Amino acid sequence: MDGVSGIRYILMDVDNTLLDFDRCAESAMRRALDEAGLPWEARMFPVFTVRNNALWEQVEQGSITAETLYRIRWNLIFEELGIPADGQAFEGRFHAFLAESHETVPGAEALVRYLSGRYAVYVASNASYAQQARRLELAGLREYIRELFVSQRVGFSKPDPRFFAHCLTALNAAPEETVLIGDSLSADIRGGLDAGLHTCWYNPAGRVPDETCRPEWTVRKLEEIRRIL
Image 1 (cartoon, rainbow, N blue to C red):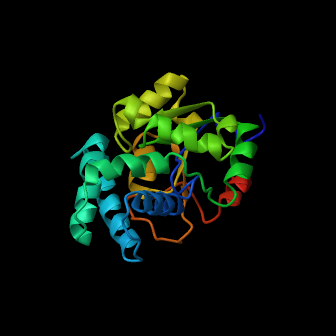
Image 2: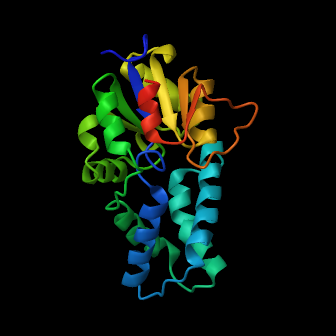
């Protein structure tokens, strides 16, 4: 391996880092609505985004579990939209369609192919194992990834230090040998920093980080990571 000296392992987030979650989720939402005989309206996806992001923040904070999120998410969304539908039943169909969605972020395949030739590449995700493994397979990315660390199996969610401790123990890796690449300042960068990892923030929108959460590297395009690692 001829990458950065001392680095041996890469932990990569999936949604909005390798796979375009917004495009995938909108497609899954449209398909599930169509199957349920419900009309699509432009106002729906912004409501989903706000509610979904708020719930995942609660998962990251440890105030709810991912299982609770899946149980209540669509009931809350439908209530806000004024749609009299069974949110829990809809969640099942949305989840199934999402597991088949695999729109990639530009440059994702080239990046993981490049990194896998220099480092041992793993996934670090708060979503379910089956869903992420299936989507990565469909996207043509799974062959470059050795294994998936997901909160469902680890027992803790990013940014909990115990999630990253589990990853390091499983890899027999030291924090200084490991880089965390992700789009979320709270789950990925904050979690990685607290665990002592190198951190690379994928920040396509050019957001300004919190003064207390400074990643080691920041990129706006995935291809830029190849010049770092």
